[in-house]
Length: 266
Image (cartoon, rainbow, N blue to C red):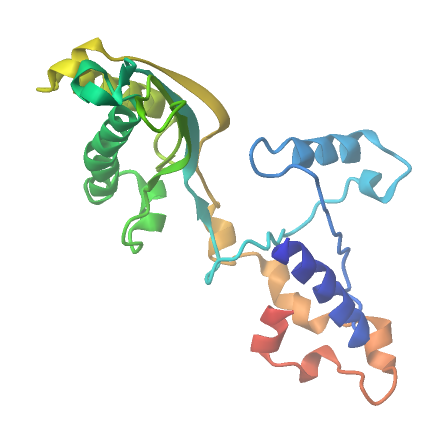
């Protein structure tokens, strides 16, 4: 929501400065751009199919600004996978908890194992995958790959050993990896943990994995865009709208009078 507000106020600021971009500037606001991307996809389909609206002009845009709250310009995106881990334990009265299997505790044991093995492996492998250039965009980030428990539900009563637990987990991965490969890694990691655990209670644990929401591969911006090699960009600062040239009052600021830093901010 903060990014949306910034986009709107950026346009208002351009108006207050009496600056009209020489090209087409389009503000796109969609209802779903994160978990599925369906909102963005619907807008693109609408633009391709429409011939009467401004969206249907089939213009080729040179750039897009996505106002995510990062302190740097992002040229690469990690892949993201969501899954729910469902654990079935064994209920018991609190009088003797050893008679039961605490599904919540088991869920956290399984998640901690994912963190201490698969997450560490993914972060370590960035240094050993020099041939996979798409990963190098993240080499200066201390821990680019993060797993996270974002939601948990389990048990029915504070004085009973919980017999079930649902844990929603987010897994990040590099652009060189695919969703299907990461699914396989997660499943194998948990399967081996349960199978090889020294805790006898793990042998009686039942669990399943359900994938939902994010199942997106990573992406890297093409090098020619990252290096700003587009020759047309050199002419941008020279193109000034008619309204700029004429000026509109004492508060009018021509583009040439704005510093590079100020231009980037706008």
